[in-house]
Length: 158
Image (cartoon, rainbow, N blue to C red; front, side, top):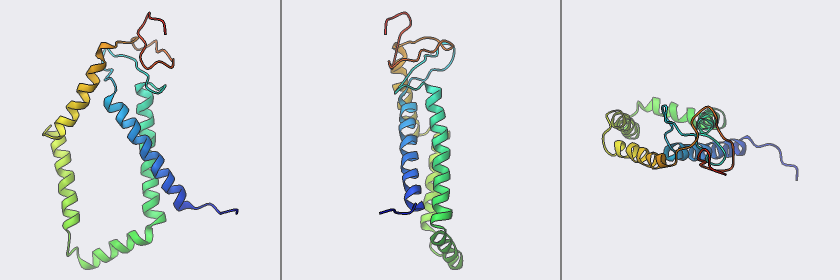
């Protein structure tokens, strides 16, 4: 029962795992303490600090992008280019889906830039959750502690 390596399965698992890590790291960074400026706090969640979670988010974002491009341009290139070719021949006689998604993304980008609801509410909610951590001040940057504790106040036993 020696089955050969299947790229479609490999890419599907890669997309799933990288999306899961993007989701996990994104939620942790969204809800975690802000940690900016001189009064920044050092925090650990599941054993990683904020910069380490940011690094995970960036790397898995790149991985997700590469898997998505491979999925589209290598695994499903025939279907993708066939679709583009047929739409080009038709001259986009029915551009509703393209127009709606472009308008939707313009609304998202503009709404976020100008801090319009509901986008500003989503951003403010994350900031308000982050501010809840302010009561749990930790060691100042420069002397990070690496322990299993999520929050550890300086001078207090672990």
